[in-house]
Figure 1: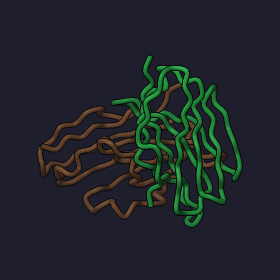
Figure 2: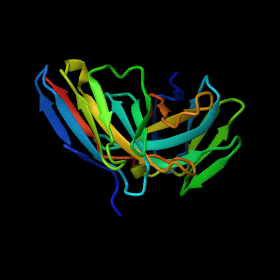
Figure 3: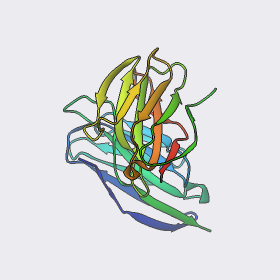
Figure 4: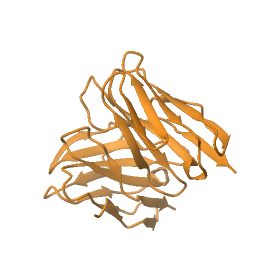
Length: 112
Length: 114
């Protein structure tokens, strides 16, 4: 079961903030966030392993609510370089699998 | 520091032909994954290895697909009797088994089946 990402697309002006959500119907042990630019490979942003964990990476941070099986990615003071498609990849608890199940992505466009 | 590399970057083939892709992971990474990505979708898991052992295969992986990692280093993905529906970007990723398991992707091989 693929995690559900929302919104599907968002357009920002430089300096604005955005939140991207990732929700799973399965119990999770990890959430991974990636950004992919057109024609390129996904680039790893961060991984969250514990319920309630929040991590930061420059002006990009994320949280993981294990009970709700949800994660959110926060982009603050967006820059043009943040444009791309953001994917969450989830690792499920039931099988202990290490391979990830990805959402369909959130397309983010930052305009000047 | 070299990342994950894949070869070839692009492959155009005719329906019914066999194709083989290669992935070289980050050198100290013992886990290697294959994913497939189609336009507008996230990567879709195909299979993964820990060292030379293939530990999991997606149910979506038909018998026409086979993957190997003979010495626990590079891996190959072969598609036999290609179909137009096989057209996609094939991504390889690698990670350490220890720690959080962050996966780092290669640039991908774009397959077009005519």
